[in-house]
Amino acid sequence: MEIDKKIRNRIVRGSRAKVSMNRLKTLITVVSRAKADFYMDHIQSFGVNMQMVLFGQGTAPREIATAMGLADSDRAVIISIIGENQLAAALDSLAEKFNTIVGGKGIAYTIPMASVIGKSIFNFLSDNRDAVRRNEK
Image (cartoon, rainbow, N blue to C red; front, side, top):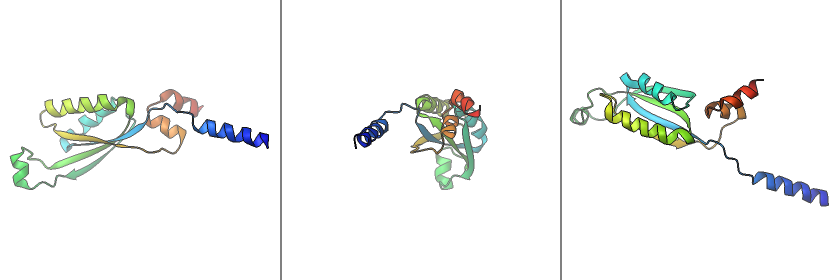
């Protein structure tokens, strides 16, 4: 009976332990299709190991798009997995690029990730190279 209590106490205490890991976010960036490669390279410099690009077209009526200076409606939606510790720097840098690059306007926002299956996948996505190397051995 006493052993059962000790085991339960250890399990309960162990589950309450805080894990201080780099949480992951999904960064969605929408830019003109012509600038997709530039922005993918730029985002990768913030420790992003996985990105995907989807091509689409804007849906604004031609009159509104012309009035806003958006002659080209071809868009690229870049989906990136980024660590929370790099997120602020990446968003600040993207905002600066959106304002300074000719034809480089865009939007960026994040979606939190609730979970990732597998320790090695998490380490890869969070750019934890040392842990990935340890798992390969």
